[in-house]
Amino acid sequence: MKTSHSIAWKSSTQPRKQRKYRHKAPLHVKGTFLSAILVKELRDKQGTRRVRVRTGDKVRVMRGQFKGHEGKVDRVDTGAGKVFVAKAEFVKKDGATKVPYPLEPSNIMIMELDTSDKRRFKK
Image (cartoon, rainbow, N blue to C red; front, side):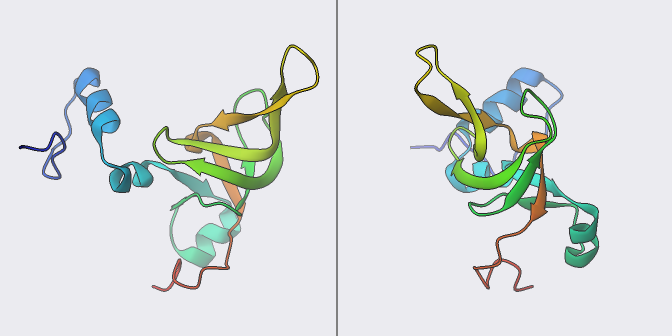
């Protein structure tokens, strides 16, 4: 049986093929889509512009209805490609229930990195 995902795939200009590639990608590839930009000080320190978001990182929301909110990452949904941040939640119609709001990783900026994992920045 042939797999539907090819690591040798070169980019296409057709949006439908780009969407198909992202949708059918396995989880270890979808994880690379979960990167967010770093704040200027961390860019200089880490020597890179973008880093994969992890639970425990402190982030700032840059776009959307929660623009300007800062909080820790509660959960990262690799399959859906969404990030859930503390205090970024909306109230349901009943007024009592709060639901975490899914955010795109491209719309957040990492302010502080979770340094509990020593292998994360070993290189």
